[in-house]
Length: 170
Image (cartoon, rainbow, N blue to C red; front, side):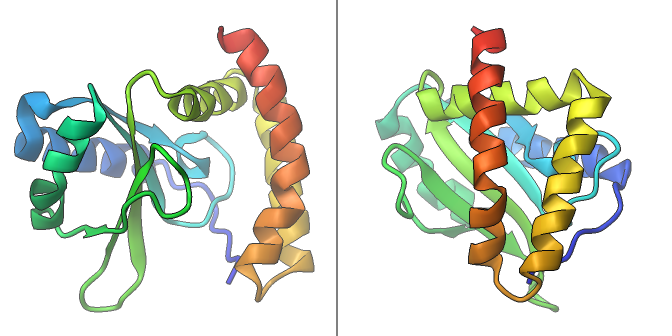
């Protein structure tokens, strides 16, 4: 379901707290944990699920971190359709509601760069961020019960914005 919640300023604090849990558990195996996705963009509505971007030095280190990540309460789903990524998710054990999605990459992976560029591009311009929110709302209204169709609907807007973001980021 494509339910958008009004922006919650506490999302940033929650993401920092979750990143701190990762750092405490993984120590030097972890290079950084970034807050990405719509919850990381001040002022815009989002599905209330935190997206994190943990970065590792290399793929072997990332793979060896699996037991520690699982110990944090995450389900490890491997690449989950995207080579180079390790996708992990954490749900509320009582309600089953998705709380966090982690998209782990090696630090120099172009996909990690793409996520950071898109986030920074929207953070830098509230008008651009508002345009993204409008597109998300349009797609959520058009596809309220189909998360796949919702994602496909907003994809062209995202791809165009990402191309601009990458030009500015590099």
